[in-house]
Image (tube, rainbow, N blue to C red; front, top):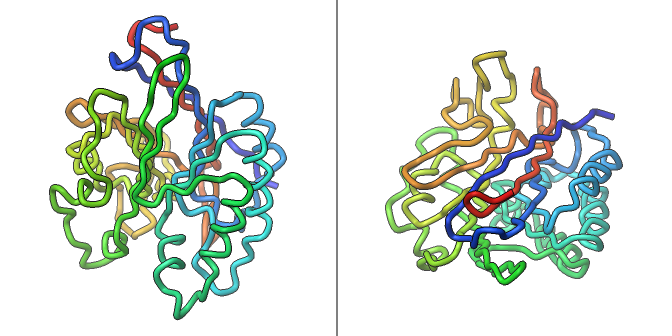
Length: 269
């Protein structure tokens, strides 16, 4: 079984009152039915040690492959939802299963039904409100079209598309967006995301010290957003390296990653 890194991030915002103890979240992405073979028991211990307010899933926990075996991850997420609120935004693999029913039948809907019954909340172009100590955070999950995941001939994402998917955000509150593909960070920021959480690129698959990710999951050399925290105007984006791989189980100098995210009031503890 492969070990998982824990990476911790802390961000601050003036949208919370000073003295607010903060929200704390565990972030997972790109487990891909665990065909890479990480130790899910150790992952669970890491999450429990963080004691998060909720768990965020930034997509691709399953594979859009006809021979995929999702049972282990369904059981794992179902158990996790018995201890924490779990919010699931779709990645390109889940979205592919959802729309191509001629190929995948009801597989996506079966997975969603089982996880929903276990307490997992799916955010398919939806927004929910999280509250703690009289503070409020708006959590959204965006479901972008499959054309935006193309390896070749991918269109640019037009301004206003996020509004069509999600409506206009309430800028009085902190807006956190789960968006699987980080390549459109500027559009998420323009929509009004204070913080976007993404995955998809698997940390660049191969990582070189001092350089970072070498190749994206779409074949792009030296991807702009491979891992870590990025800034655009007044918006932040956190990109997870993800937990697995698919098709070719390859991660070089690139351990699977669980993210711990804390959001504090400005000048918070």
